[in-house]
Image (cartoon, rainbow, N blue to C red; front, top):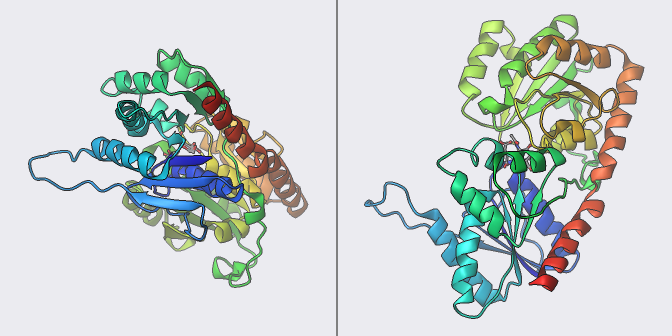
Length: 375
Ligand code: GMT
């Protein structure tokens, strides 16, 4: 199939999933066209089957807001015609599903018929999409998609609760290429991150309020009082400066590494002993799955789709949002005994197996085939 993929090209989970999906589909012989405003961060253009088309939005001073949706729909129309794209798969409803619908309508005028598959990722529904300013447009574009998927049961339920949805929503979970998380790199050593006797605690996110990075810091503060430890904080976001100040205030700044938008997440995770994800809400928690694939147990909140990924007492522990004391207790329980830590590490990898790319990507292929057959 010739598939157009629309996504945010940034470090966010939805962009990562869309990129990994496109790459895997290309390995399976499909022709993939990424259509977005920047080359997706995890996209390496090394295959004949993978193409990237940049959406440019000319700056014009009259516009307070530059019309990205308009530029995207126009680009979709042009690319569908030029490359004979058969199906469009848009990741993150806002504004991608809306722009794709406009493109579809424009193409019908030229007697070209392209179905749209929309994948809901989380904040497009729970935080942003349900805002009254966006809700009518998001409801409309979900209902007008030819197929809709959500990345967890929890997100599907949230969508049905928050919007008036007439369309069927299929759950296709996020996935991971387990072969990429095997620690097979020679140019990096644990000693770069911490001393032998220090436990490595890791958090990766876009450092936004929804991630509750303050809780990460408090949990780590409690851990390092009991045992030598270092905290790896990967990602960039609006909370960073405040969090740095908090680390200084607590006297732990020299134990925290702010790694920014790292391209070496796989290495950081491979050397980690524990992953913290105390989010306020999380439709899935792709970072937790990446940690588990790297044999890292997870201490998380029990919100949204996280319980579908992190299994209580097996791959880690889940606590109520904001229950830092319980999260600390669970973290120390895992870290304080080497044999127990080893068991949790093995369990984490084992739990991740059901999300293997080879199991999940065929589910998308089936959705494309069924949608095209009905169209
Ligand atoms: O976590 C974010 O704020 C980024 C956001 C995104 O769209 O990239 O993540 C959402 O989608 C990810 C991929 O499906 C999920 O793993 C995250 O749980 C979800 N984030 C939230 O629901 C807060």
